[in-house]
Image (cartoon, one colour):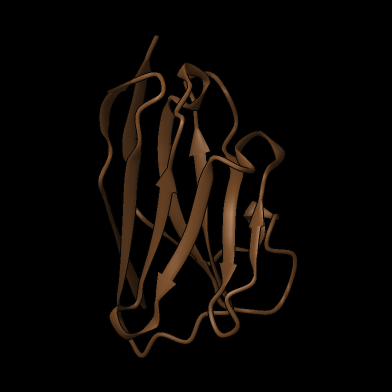
Length: 124
């Protein structure tokens, strides 16, 4: 079992930055990828970014490219999401997740473990 704990959310103004963290603990961590997803009120959960744990390849949804950066610290089993130039439409609960097996990192259904989520609110 893997436990994920997110932190770093909050209320900011448009144009500000936030950094989310997600620490993984539990059994020896050997996931294929870690991802960030978000869910706004009344909307489905959507992919934001992902990183392949061993080689560090990164993936982003188009709406955050150039503004968000995903990174990881293998020694700490922690993944980060640096969010810059935040917009009101980035407002959502952000979740981190672990995908254990090789596959499409964009696919929400392929992730095995999820954190509890952290709220990000961007005011205009």
